[in-house]
Length: 262
Image 1: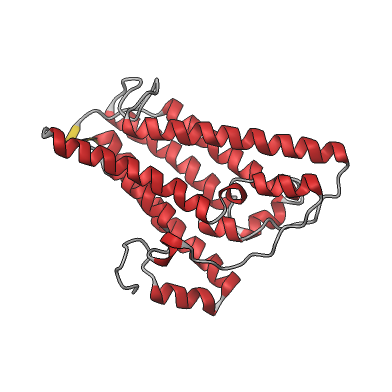
Image 2: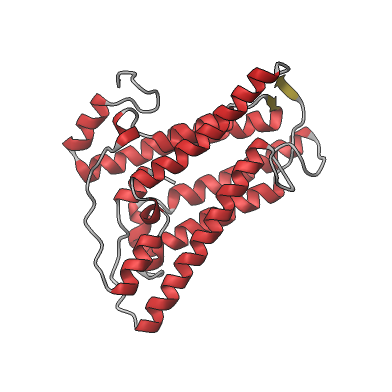
């Protein structure tokens, strides 16, 4: 889920539906958000190995080669869906098919379903890369991972969580209120790094007291995807905000707080 997605509204023709359509769209938006909410909670348990029936280190036993291929295909499916549907050109076409008020909710729903598929079909690679035996250090690493998730959720709320995940759009449509034009803002964490949501994900995925080969594959591929996603997102932000965003890039580091931007 990205900053530009929060700042760039859906494209395409407005849908002037009936009252029934407005209610259905609103209920659909709520359902999509609930699926997302379940997915993000499951993701925390999946990565940290907490309170879920299947985590990143459990599942069907397969050969290492088969596990790597299946896992890469699952992550690739999510990456393609998540990136393609976020692009402005795709939205311009997509909103000719999907009503504009539910475009964001549909995107969120598809992203959540692709992640749930990944969790379901993920194949573990149990070889241990490192295993921290010191209980104090292990607690610190687990706490750091949890702090990464907190950073993700907190950062989404300070840039309008409910718009980012589609509820704002369907609520506006329900009451017949026009959405506000995109406005460039850098609240709180965005004054220190340009992408605190991505930073939170990287911390959450990489900080662990026990790093298996499967966990390392997941962390490495998702981190690479994040870097590619940032490049695509910032291209859209420059197109949208021009010099205002270029100056922001010069002032603020991409992911490392207080590091001068290059």
